[in-house]
Image (cartoon, rainbow, N blue to C red; front, side, top):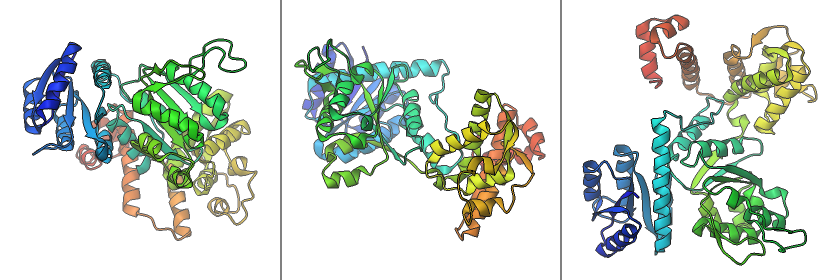
Length: 477
């Protein structure tokens, strides 16, 4: 049982919640406003969960949430909200609220949500005590959009909200879903995946919700669906924009009440599943066309994550290429050591319509067709007519014979990509690019020396005073 702080300026609601929670054996502390709540949190380090209303004076629920997350990060916060305050509740989830209660709420919902919050907090503290990293999935790349996504995942790691990942095909939406799962309070639970566009509506419903014996021809026994299999964990629902309207209604019921009916069943089942949905389509356009429910969209997009296409973060291409090269070279047992300079320049200049998936395929092709040494541009792009294209401009008239290892060539490749932008009369931010390059090198030196400033300074050929200044200036410590 837990120690719960209830914050609301309505005495009747505070009293009702106290009765409901005490029946489950919880210890309940009451506060009439945000100031009292902060005082209680400061005086009582045993408080595990705080349930707070949004509309209070002089400190409202959002301000209270922000201060509680800063001063008492191990306390999980549940926000109470009226239906008209949905947008504010969503903002609360995005800044770290564990979950929310929509007024008027059912007592069973309150008890279930508080129980889940206490269990999630115990998992969080256990992982923290064991020194486990919250992010078990790391992204390859140093671009600002990727850094922003990493920060967002860390920020919402203690929330239980649904997430909508958008982006073109091949940008890595499933990787984001895995990162969200393993950074969350559900990381010990299962993660299951389904592609909504790969199945007919009837078969998809059977996969999601399960079916009972005799529900249709071939249903010779009861079969649990993915919501049952993902109980306590995460369900990654890919291509959610392809859902039939009937299935959308059933999904909405699961998200709102945690309830569903198996196909052919009569008994309502319950589940505790976090949904991470993904799509490469514009759901707002589908809403206008009448093929996607607006209420489901807002339920899914509590935490929106957008993955930009690879062409908009070309500075990540060399890092990704080196990472993929190392993986495929080991798997195929090839002595491939890197890329020629023209090959790197060609990769930086290419538009990558298939995004990371296409990059992965081309690196596999390059490794398969290269026995040893460095992969050449013709090996990567030999099937593309590059006459008059950016690839031709970047590589020059010939392939060249210069050899640059994949890791060491990152700066050269980045410079080649920026030069290609300038050639096409696209503006760049020179100062930002130089700072980013310097940060990459200093960070690499720190990692190579286990954060030993003296040794890192030697690797970079600068003084101890210089590296200490740069580490602070670049935000590396």
